[in-house]
Length: 562
Image (cartoon, rainbow, N blue to C red):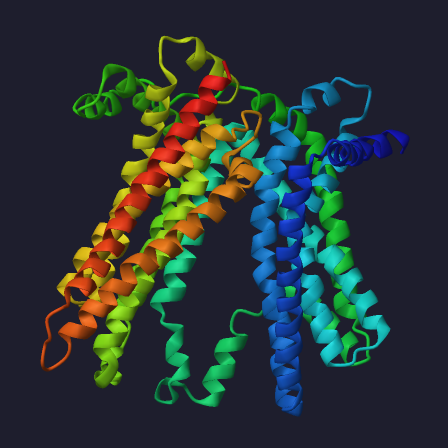
C-alpha cells in the first residue's frame, strides 16, 4: 500500500513544483484563462437554472423532460469518456517517459497498473466533472433540491466516470497487444477526428432549425418517442440519470445507484485480471521505434522542386512537409477543419433571405462583411494553431538549423511560405464561395477578396514572426505553444488587426453601395473620393506594415539567439 501511495505522490509533487517555478507570464495567463473559466461556469449555471425553471412550470411534463434531459446529458459524456479513456491510457500506461524507470523498480506490476489507471481516470474525466458541477448545481438550485442531492451527485459521477474509462483502458490493452502503441495512437486519433467531423456534418445537414417551424414539427407522440429512442436501461448513463432524478425529488434510487457502483467495481476487477496477463507484454511491444512512412516517398520532393524558390528554402520546405505528414496528430486535424469549413459554407447556402425582399440587398451586403470578419477570425485561430508554433516545432533539433549554412532570414521565410499557402487557400475559399452563395454586389466581391488576401499575408507574417520571437522549444505539442503568453499576444494583435481591417474596408464600401443604390445616382465629390481611397490605402499600408513588422521582429529574435 505504501508503494501505491508513492506512485500517486509523484503527480502531486510535479504539479507543486510547476506552480513554484511559475513566472509572471504564467500567472497572467492563468488569470486570463481563469476569468474565461469563471465566465463559462456562470453561463452553464445560468443556462441549467433557466431551463430547469422553465420546465418546472409544466409539472408532470416538465419532470418527464428533465428526466430525459439528465439521461441525455450523461449519454453524451459516456462516449466522450470512453474514447478519452482509450487515448489517455495509451499515454499513461505505455508511452509515458517515466515508465521505463518505474517498471525497473521493485514494485508489483499490478500496483503500478492501478496507480496509472487512477491517473488515467483523473485525466480523462476532469473536464466532464468540471462541466457537470455548474449544470447539476443549476438544476439543484432551480428545483430547491435537498442537501442529499449534491452528495448523491458526487457519489454518482465517480462510478459513472470509472466505467467508460475502464472500458477504454481495456480496449487499449487489447489494441496495444495487436498493434504497436504508437501506431494504435495514430489510428485512434485519426478515427476520433473522422468521427468528430462526421458528427459535425450530420448535425448540420439534418437542419435542426426546422424544429423552429411549426409546420415541420411531428405529432407529440412521435416527438417524445424520438427523444427516448437512444436511451436504454442497460447503459450507465440511464442509471446515473435515474439516480439523480430520484434524489432531486427527495427520494432514493438504490437499484440504479447500486448498478453504477457494482459495475464500476466489476470492471476494475476484470481490468486487474487482464492487466496481469497483457500489460507488460503490451508495454514491451510499445518500445519499438516509430516508422518514418513518408521519408522514402519522392512525390513531395518532385512537387516542391517545381516551385520557384531557392535551393535552401526548397529543402527547408521539404523538411517541414515531411515532418508534418509524419505526425498524425497534426495533419489529421485538417479533416476536422475541412468539416467545419463545409458546415460554415453550408450555413450561407441555406440562408433564406427571400422572406424579407425589401431588405435582402442590405442584409446580403452586411453578411458579406460579417463573413470577412469571421473568415479573418478563423484564419487567426488556424494561424495560432499551425503557423505560430512553426519555429518551436524544431524542438531540440533547432541547433542543427543554427549551425547549418542557412541564414535566419531564409529559415523564417521558408516557414512563412509553408504557412501562407494553406492559410490563403482556406480564406479565399471561405470568402469567394460565401459571396457566391449570398449573391452580393460585384464591387463587394472584389473588395472582400482583396481584403482577405491582404489579411492572409499579414496574419501569416505576424504569426511566423511572433512565433520566432516567443519560441517554446521544450513544449510537448503545438497546443502548448499556441496557449503560451506569446500565442495569447498574437491572438490579441490578430483580432485587433482583423477588426480594424473590417472597419477600413466596410465603411467606404457601404458609402459606395449606398450611393449606387439610389434612384438618382449622384457622383462623388472629390473629398469623398479622397476619403474612400484613403481608407483603402491605409488598409493596404497596415497589412504591409504588419507583415514587415512580424518578419523583421522574428529574424532579429533568431539572430539574437546566437
